[in-house]
Length: 418
Picture 1 (cartoon, rainbow, N blue to C red):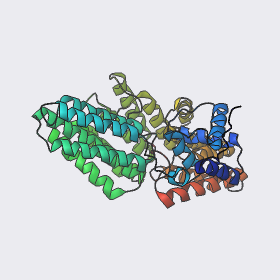
Picture 2: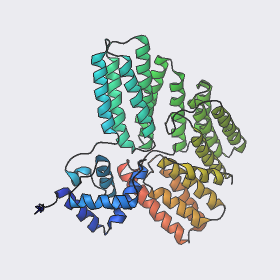
Picture 3: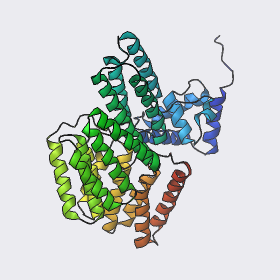
Picture 4: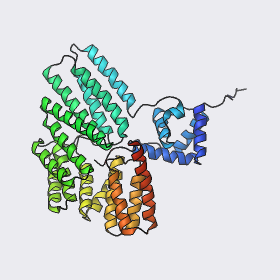
């Protein structure tokens, strides 16, 4: 006769059952919420039925959730992972960070100099990985990983290196500084963002890399847009184009920022001229990796076009916004496109659709201090034009909850409207 294991399930398994019961969720509802949380992180999770079976195994204690699912379970229950599993989970990509640490150490030991080609390649790959994770990763989580990689660069710069090796390290440090500045803007850390941009510019000058200088100015222009300082944003976007190297992403990014700032100033002619220039520039260059923060791709142009035209009040924004919604992989782009589309349909006297689209954006968990103001504008517009509609009141409450959560922690959601 087979002996039956009657030992009680682990405490973490019982805790999962208790939390789900307290929220009156069935396993299917928990599975649905896990998929939503995963989507906001850019993770493609299995179908609901597979997740329901996984939840059943976790709750029985027969299988322990992987690191990804431990993190997602903690998120949907709004608890630290330590409260569920008794051990910390690493920030997104931490396992990859550990792998890079080991590779860097191995490279340093294997090569004759302190800084060899293998170590430099590992640093470049790590920087590229962080730039690609930006649209999907909560800002505070990403900041911890950026700091870790920055320490690697500082350590390598302290060793002996050739001129070309040092230049590569300075460039890597510059891109990490720019990414740091971007995350600080997302978190409304204005002083830290400015210091990080200044550092990136200094490293760019020392490395002789004008693209770093261009992106430093672009970061300042974007922050001016976030702060709704439209003339300043327009001036910075134009100044940046003067120093941006031709055929690179920085020039295109600065051009679309000019279009956005001009839209807020009601200058339709400048908006269309800037968007046309950006389109032409994009036609004559290879875009490289998609969803890389410092690589401008055609999907980004569609998104910026939707935003600029929506701010301009141009009905053509609807087509572009719907296209972004159709193709968006990054959750933050999807949230931004929904707000753009909401503003357009509101202008066409479809407030119920506008409120529904806005609700999807604020419920996504993908808004942060640098883009919550977009939802605030929609909230004000709905209240001004259609205060008596139940859809307006419903959206206002959902927006209020999202804004309060961001104001309380400053770390909710992923990425900005960039």
